[in-house]
Image 1: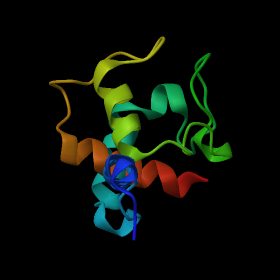
Image 2: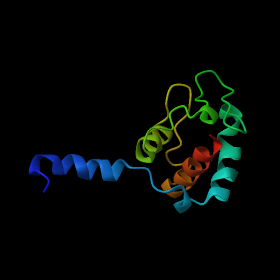
Image 3: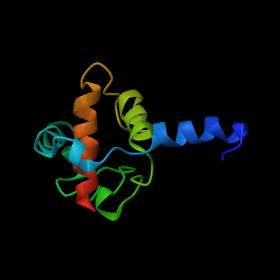
Image 4: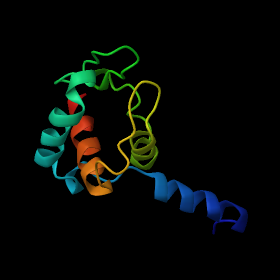
Length: 102
């Protein structure tokens, strides 16, 4: 039996765990990625712009989807915020696609 002090951490871990890639619409994710992300991150995730993560090498992809989703929505370093431009389901599709670039 799990102790009560650990329950909030377990719940948080479940919430932050990345959803299965099969749950994402990878085709739509690829289309959105090519339209909004490839100019800086590269078509194959090789990272073109300075400070752009190299998804092909797995950079930043160890983070749960919800953390990455928040970074994309608010922007990070030279990346502009996508809040109001792309909806959460679209962003999750992109994240699912990006995870296939490794």
